[in-house]
Amino acid sequence: MRFGSIRSWTIAALFCVILAVLPACGDGRNVHDAQSPTSSSTKPSTPSAATTPPPPPKAAVAAPENWFDLEVGDCLTAVPQIDLGEVTAPVVDCAEAHRAEVYRRAPLEVNAATADVADKTCADAIGPYTGGGRYAVTYLIDSNQDRTADNPLPSTVICLLQSADGSALTGSARR
Image (cartoon, rainbow, N blue to C red; front, top):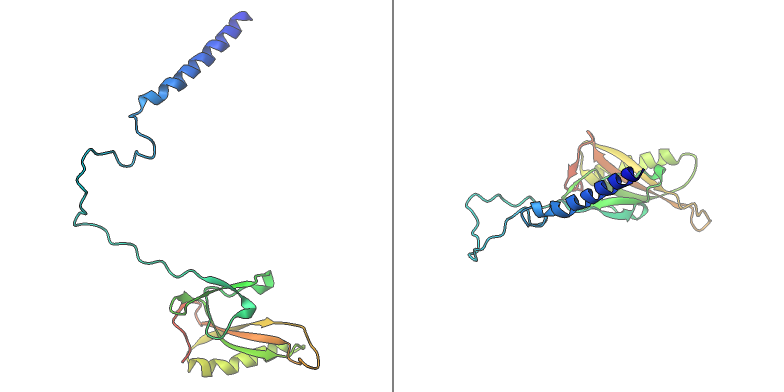
């Protein structure tokens, strides 16, 4: 048993020696310095004639806005999935690639025919906004549900136009 314990200590000591000596086998540089060896030259480097051009500028970052605050002319990189609980919509400048554009906000009565009224409201407004063209139409309904005699139209339909083939739009569709 004594032989087994001496053997274990010997292996542990040998392991510690290897760990202590192993870093000395390197070239003395830090891992962070490994990309570019140090130079003793003080002459500034000059760019070569074959430099690569800078990357193109990144597209504007979409600013999230509450979808119920969207205004006519706002362009979105994605239509919010309000049925899944999304509250914000990614708004960008219309000069950037986008998936939808708000072209109408209108008061809406909340009743059994809400979808029919919203369809008609949005369909009637697409031509005057765009001057023609093929667009798919969808809408969001902000149902305030605050019906009183003073507020017979408590909800708002927010009409959105999209490319008919699902591709990204660039520029406003407003004419």
